[in-house]
Length: 289
Image (spheres, rainbow, N blue to C red):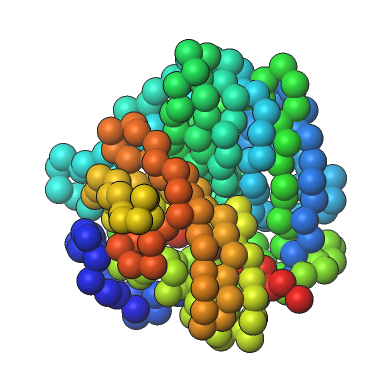
């Protein structure tokens, strides 16, 4: 599923896994919620999952204030041990107002864990974004979110043999939540075009029309449609929060916040080519019946 792109695939240090998509079908139920002010973002989401008896979810960050944002952006790996790494930790000028974002919420070593990419306007009015660390805190009023809760999948984070980076992988289970929409949760491995991943998931599951929600990961740079041409975000890895709509074998529109290694935020629709997965992508595809 690899294809020529503006930037080539990253060369990772570990053995290349044969399967490039790891998918688990599941029903989902979507909950529109307001997270409690003053709580860490991860703790507020954990409370809501516990309330409905669920373990894992993909989360859309829809809006609201944050009183603390502890974050990083992608960076070069200077010791050659990996294809990419994380920058030093930054602290946003707060309070900030969320522009949007996505999170994967599951477990790591048995404890609650979250992978979150978001963009926001800081207290100076500047658009910033990145990979949020657990110390991020909900502001003085609630943060609005949409939780896409799984009834037949759990998400577990661990170090990947191929990339030597922490990644989430779905696995089947049975939960007490009863989903009302057919969905597929997929871990997309490096070197796969993200549009092709969406189309392959839809074809394998027989979805004629689908939405992409609460999805996130990294791309090798990024290629966005802009003014009749394309705009390239600098690599080797960019952080992405993604949502969109696709028709099987036809049109697909994937809109993204893209955060590059310089801290710049790019917003727009991803081109059909030029958006290879860099390290991993956590992709939720929900059928539109």
